[in-house]
Image (cartoon, rainbow, N blue to C red; front, side, top):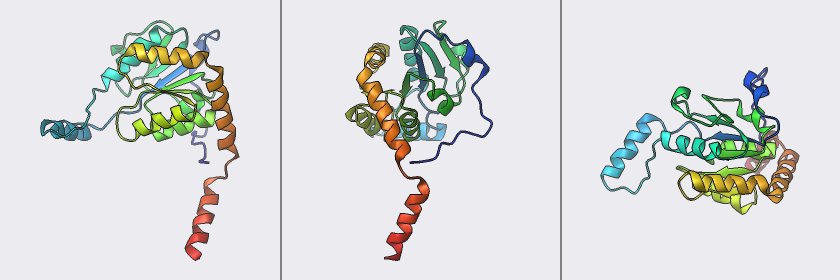
Length: 206
């Protein structure tokens, strides 16, 4: 079990109180995207025939907003650091530059994520089901593991419609919610990082 990394004094944003209370809250964050230098490298690799997928950071954001705009929910979407005023969303979808993810997850019914390790760990700790749309790296494997463990769905097909349908299924599936809460209890019952240090010291001494 890793420690919760909320900054001391961190609080929920003022706009949190304005979110509809009669709808499930869906939190969406697809990470911070790849650095420009990495994207440039991948573009050059593709030019030389290397089978490396390259994505436009605005594309998954537009897909998320379109899907959640059609979903009966209250949604909060991170823009990956892109300007908020360039995103068009339905009234029940609040688009922000960034948010205190761990704090919001405590009040969330569903987490739409790219499948990065930290995001999955935080969702499991909060007991929140996940809809995972992987983009690169280990995210594909992480998405498959989330599905295998019954903690959510792996969205394998691009586009807003598959994402919308996955979110609808997960919000209606009490079994997934129960499994996410069970996983939370298991995680909270694990020993802390200090226990791992002690174990490694014992191994090194033998």
